[in-house]
Amino acid sequence: MATDKVIGIDLGTTNSCVAIVENGVPTVIPNRGGYKTTPSMVAVTEAGKRLVGHIAKRQAITNAENTVYAAKRLIGRKWHSPQVRNAIATSSYRTVEGPHNDVRIVLRDKEYSVPEISAMVLQEMRVIAEDYLGAPVGKAVITVPAYFNDNQRQATRDAGEIAGLDIIRIINEPTAAALSYGFGRNLEKTVAVYDFGGGTFDISILEIGQNGVFRVIATAGDTFLGGEDVDARLIDWLVQEFKREHDIDLRQDRMALQRLKDAAEKAKCELSSVRETEVNLPFIISSERNEALHLQKPISRALLEQLSLDLIERTIDICRQTLEDAELEKRDVEEVLLVGGMTRMPRIQQAVGEFFEREPSKGVHPDESVALGAAIQGYALVGEEHEMVLLDVTPHALGIVTQGGYFEELIPQNTTVPTHRQKIFTTSRENQTAVKILVMQGEHERADQNELLGEFILTGLRRAPKGEVEIEVTFEINADGIVSVRAKDLDTGLEQSIQVTASSGLTRDEISSMMHEAKDQLVDRRSSEELEAAKQEAERLVGEIERLFPQVEQIVAQSDFGREAIDKARVIVDRAKNAVTRKDVAMIKEQIEGLARTQRMFKGVVAKTI
Image 1 (tube, rainbow, N blue to C red):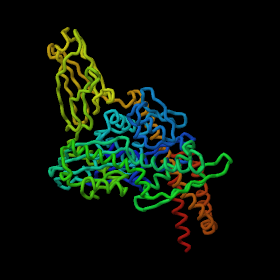
Image 2 (cartoon, rainbow, N blue to C red):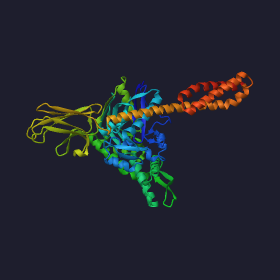
Image 3 (cartoon, one colour):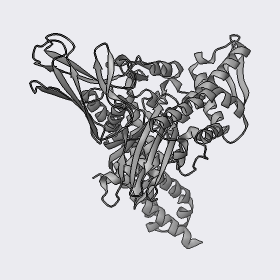
Image 4 (cartoon, helix red, strand yellow):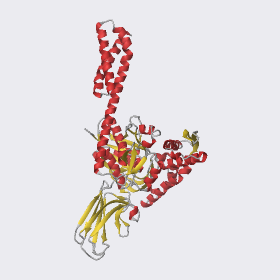
């Protein structure tokens, strides 16, 4: 039976993290290696085995083509989008167009959807939590970048469902960080959360009230701006330097590119604490004359800052615009929280401090606060003992397409949800008997530059001259961010509505099939873990008994009883070895008890003679 506890998951571009609230205290759950974050990486080995997390990262260089990183940058995106084109150009793994204009990743000749890859990471988070709690986990709150659109949010929900989780809420990452900062502290202040992670950038401005009310005033961001782009600048520089020296393009070799990516990320991290480091990659590639070439380059913090300065400036421009949208002055922001791994970079801390004219707070952990906030939100949703109200906003404007292909906004960006808005439109053609309502999300005045969320047709309109029939369109967003749209003919009362279900690019049948496969994988994994644990215990006991055999034989061999005990011990050891060879978990477990008794007896015999 699943525990009634809700886990909070930060599904990150580079790393993921899982947390829970226990006895009123939010806690990050470490993985088996003792790490509090797990790389958001997935690989498939030559034998067809799935690897997730640290184990996937460790083999990424030797298995570059079948190792996925930064899948979050592709989730919920259309195949032809510029962001997908950009990501594909720099990735070591192969991607193809899916059946619904979505992105599919090819690993060992099998196609996987992006939500399916993300589900493998989420399932790893679930396993980490279940191992810690000693019980199955059913419910979760998952975080997403504040600037994710509805299709990206739906794709994240689908990933959770494939992983076997009941996603009770999706919340924005900077909001989650603010929850972890303000939880139980009885604060009353306006905070800005500057969240610069591996793949995305967000800025949110919130009011934290003494009575546990967290109200988002404004949010903005860029879902394709992060540490990956800083790494890419460093990789480009290294590639160009190597080409200048050897006239060889390292991008043509997948393994060399993966080694470069690893080295660039490592150098970037090191330069947060030192002023100079070195990228040293021996035998990076062979020349045409079959001569082994090495890459050895010193990298200074100043060079990294120079290469990434425009990216940092882009984040500051977004902060400036968000303050304007919130109708606030810099002095109105009382605390600036830094979230995401990139905020460890001294130049970023300096830029944020200069813009907001105050030293950023060290009050939250850049890698853990988002997962902690998700766990706090889950705790508040299912618990009765803690009063907390979260008022979030819609990050993108919502509206419909009007004549000429323009976007008519009904719900502006940064409107507090839940909300509803109405607007009256008139027919654009003579004797028009039907009107097609196209529901869009975005900020561009041209409708085709925004994201289509859904469409429906209102039919049976009375024939009338152009502009005489009035249609009332109502938009509604509930607390879960579900959008409903209704169109009503004010003359006849005829009405048509739609609950806008964003698309992740997967059908219900595909999600169901992926869920079953994920469940089977988890069962196989649990079985192999159970086998491995039993095998290790049996082998440990057998080794201990065999080590004591000569001494025990010498002590008890004179009596018939002793010889009989020795023979029995040999039978138990042989049975255990046989069970291990056959990989029979039940049989191994059966033998472990006999092995433990034998080991205790042998130890007792030896101890008596000392």
